Image: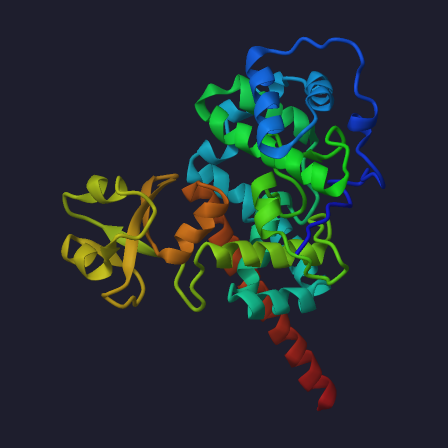
Length: 344
């Protein structure tokens, strides 16, 4: 399937060659050695025209605000401060409207990919508040900044810059126009370029996958989680009482389930819900206002962390999903009561 990019993220798509290729500078351009090396690699691997790509790279700008944002990610806040930002009445109300407006697409995505409706809706809610906050940075600048001026993850963002340029080339899009997050994520679903190319789907059957469109974002989120191993009907997380001497050891094992509930229970960690003893889990620790709080995280929790590698993020998706499901059931119950009264 060919992926097309349009709408808010790529609204300046060109019909012919990209603008940056049409207006390649004729004068000599001086680039940093590491950028020159990247240009050479793109030419060798993918056949990019060196002159055109050098011209494009000369237009990219390092953004200090992006580096500052990377140094203080919102997910680093303690859980008791992080949660109210994403799980609150305003976001639940907006999520219910989004769910209602896109009920058919949400239901079809859940049926197609096995991901619960409320999880799909909650993910979009946490990512962009249902399209309200899709990012203000030029994607080119974001990826350039992080590829060449952020050593801790330079290799990753250099790869994403490569994927972004391939994406733009495939669609005849001017790479200087798309905007997204400070990390280079795009659209309502906030996909990085590599994920856009791999997992975006044309869910509204318009002939193109466009993550600025609700239906395509819905289908793409569900497809992404399915591809990373979502288990239909599987648990996400349950609260736990954590005792014993091995708490730090278990927390330090990471988020991927590796221990059976039975072995954790024997070690003094008790789930506050009925969970089959053979189920594998990870011990999660979040910072509550009065001290640490513990959960058992299962495979589906780990899948959510593949979307954003943060326990706070994954737990906020989980909690918002539960709040949305409860609110929708409550609204449905009120509607049924009203209908009964009318019939009587």
